Image 1 (spheres, rainbow, N blue to C red):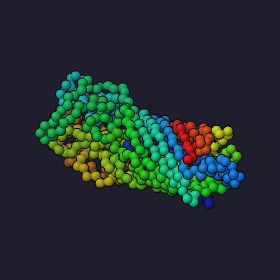
Image 2 (cartoon, one colour):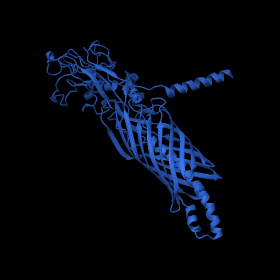
Image 3 (tube, one colour):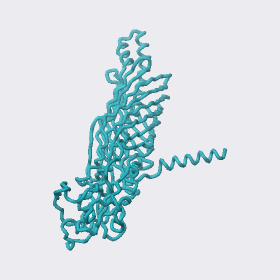
Image 4 (cartoon, rainbow, N blue to C red):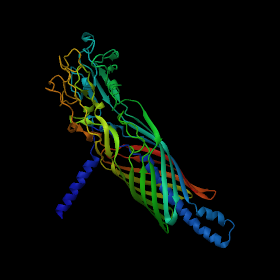
Length: 525
């Protein structure tokens, strides 16, 4: 007995550490559309309140029909309404920029130090890896400014804003069955909010575009003069980081439900199956923390159960909801096993006299992604007096680790570029007669001058890839909410209007903490 208790305790500790531990060095985070599902649960609470009224009026209709009342037809029409319609508008804004920054940054640091080879002090990134030029680059004016002494710091404060409308219809079917559809239109805006400061040793002028000729035959854009330019350079196709708002809008995933309800006195039990049809977009990986409408284009299926009970002026409700998000392909960026942010290092394909390329262009691929299990539990209460409703509760949300693997394998002939810092053109692959040198074990915080190049070209292999860096991990959040509403009748149809707010916690930095508002109008017709 004692051993079993110890084993249970250890399992709980392992689970707690995996859920609550801080996560770092990631290139992607699952952006859960919490605003939509939160309102969906709130709608269901309103739905029960209206159903309760419908049930009462059915009894009234029968009684008045037996008594021959003139208005019995009107009341019967009210009692036999088959549709429940709800429209909602919502706004949501992230409030965990520090946690999100740690999630994406190297080793969870709040700021990174970038320095050239000859700059004094420690650093997280050598500036030469990012292609930031020094005095000996291209024109040889070394006397004009220091040699490889560029220095700066960067930080991020990622934010997300989401707003939109939801259209919800539930249709009564035969024998207590019902069917519902939720259609959300969503606008998502994200901004990594990259900031660079304490800049010194920066080249004073911008280099002119260079058109390589002969074997190289490539048009090169202006070289970046600082980290801000380097992380959004035109030659970098993916993983850009900047301080600009990126926005997408569209039809998010449609949720279909088929359910069966059973009412006994003032208690209602709903059992349902559900299907999520992806109508949103897929990640493009062009920007770190890009906006995504929907769940990344994954079909999902699941089931759930709702239980509601009314006692005097109180209505209590619980909702247990489960979905499994199936496999789909997404484009994501990932690091090497060499360490965090290795995707931002320089690459070479081994061709003669080719300038270093951006490694992230090769380390961004289509991955098969399986988000897996998603569970949601709602506990809510409604207090009603004189047609005024005060609703409050908590929503607990959990998501499993993703599973990811390459869609088509890794077959690129590419290696980590080796720089000879003492060469006349420091950003060109080193060598007097050969230009295919690599530095296979390099890390982004390694100096390039204290080591020598590989004896022969070493190609990056699939076993060198760290796909976990592109994987979103398990998420757990506890989300309290409160709303106030008013109910009445419109041409004998019951309706409810409510306004509410919620807060989404992030017990770890694997999910996006946020707060939000919603306005909901529901009617039975």
